[in-house]
Length: 153
Image (tube, rainbow, N blue to C red; front, side, top):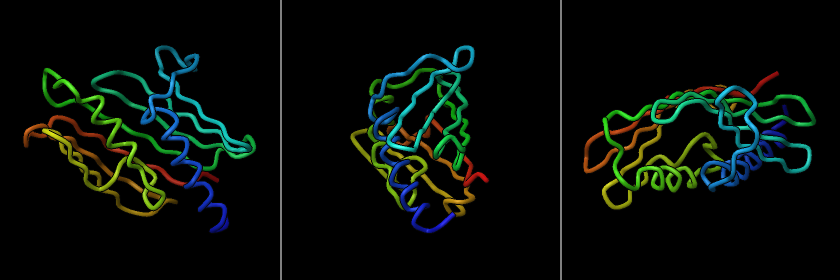
């Protein structure tokens, strides 16, 4: 894949994320039993975020270009405490809306608002990566997520 194609793919990925989960996008018909599916299309590019579960969940994001899968990411997340603090979901979406083209996986490296803190770290590059994110509440780690993926051929 050319550098220009990869740059455009990153731009599309950020756009897709801001129009689906992070942006409050509405789920479509489930593609698998009990999955939550969040699709986005712009021109020849199609994105699908599909996950299963709630406070413990697993999912996959894939981008297709003209019906060919070109990029994907798997993730597994879990809430680490018995009761989720009020505002957690809104904070997570706000953090994820800070996704950047340089690292179009989850949210920014660091983000803080009120009692919540977000941290995301990534190893590798866009074509082959792995990473993790955490959310803390009043200094205590309450959520973690692991992700990995890359370019598909």
